[in-house]
Length: 302
Image 1 (cartoon, rainbow, N blue to C red):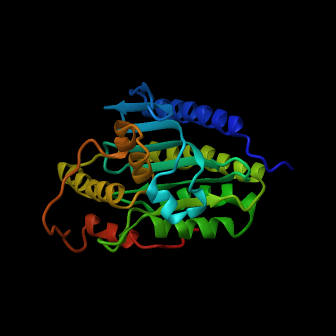
Image 2: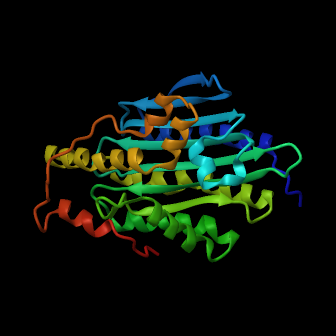
Image 3: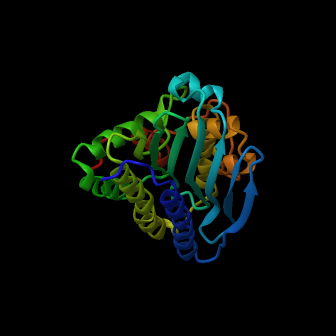
């Protein structure tokens, strides 16, 4: 098999994936529509951002495609990957975050991406990355098990160790050190994937991208009509604050996008439309709000 990266095929898949996910979410929401905002980056490249606001289920959600390129990597990247110094680069991907209004429907995030850096006279440096994770506020064990079963099954054709490795990586990555808790119940996370031939790495990235709707839509369908109280809504907004904290303090994609001159509105579309903080708030013992803490530690779900 050829190991030369087929950039054109990767971009075509990502554009199609954005279309497929948007169509699936529109159908599941029943009311909302995505508004598209195409943009160009002065340093090279661009993308198309799609945002839904005030849907039937989705309070705000974004499904973004971007393809940026440049003559030099940002300092933050070359500090960790010195072999990238002096190389031009291309980065492309689809990234999405869905913030439902109903507190019983979890927030979800997914991302698949491809990166390549080239220099005349040298082999290209390339890799795939991505994954998806689930952030419930009132978690249901069956939902978490379904989410991880889909994750496991899409990994299975690529080796029995793939799911355990990338599940563990997700738990470690989406961890708020200053809160001593995971962001949610995890899923999959992978980066620097180039140890297989290009075609196999690309196949895996496609499996992850295509698996997102299989994992999320059944949960949305089950929980979207669950009645909720104002107290539960306020708890959801409080917990959304953790989402903001992670994205601004730890998220690599946010940092890379801002440091490479990406479009700020698209980079920060992952933020919830509403969130709240309250000084030293603690849930009452024994309440459903307190039970969330039991889910914010790594666990074997299947």
